[in-house]
Length: 229
Ligand SMILES: [Ca+2]
Ligand SMILES: [Ca+2]
Ligand SMILES: [Ca+2]
Image (cartoon, rainbow, N blue to C red):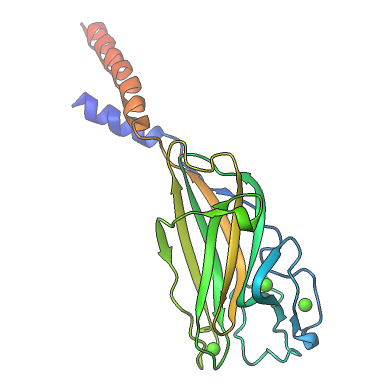
């Protein structure tokens, strides 16, 4: 019975695997700040670069022409600016490099304008120094329901979450991470992006832990038995 108890002890004593937050600059699109009355700013937000069709910033504050047509963004600390797309995209190269044995979790609030039918949205993680040379990863999981802005005050926004996993020696290892967002047909809205990286135990790592600890506990048990004599 000693071995299973030692194994359980080894597992319970293992340090918890924590997710590292990877900072995204201007992740809530509050920069450059402009007056709500202006409504729309058709330029790339600070720290982002854009291309393709139309993209830019909307401020849906109380004096904005968008105020009634876009639900309040689901962030208590938000100042009501958000990114919009009509066929365009925005990307940001991150200071962090693509790592092996890692699960990346990329999330964003995705919104729909009143009266519009949501078209599509892209929430992507990849690597590369510039968009035209980027390689985007295939998500391992994706929760990305289409928002539908109806009469409710919060139904115009949904949270999207995608995970991406790397193993040993993935393509792009050591290259800078890139995130990209976009969408279109009608207006696609984005706000409040986040990205975390969680180390994934390499295959066999747990076996090594158990193999390393079990003989020691077995030796202790043997010594204890001898001292009892
Ligand atoms: Ca915002
Ligand atoms: Ca503003
Ligand atoms: Ca609504």
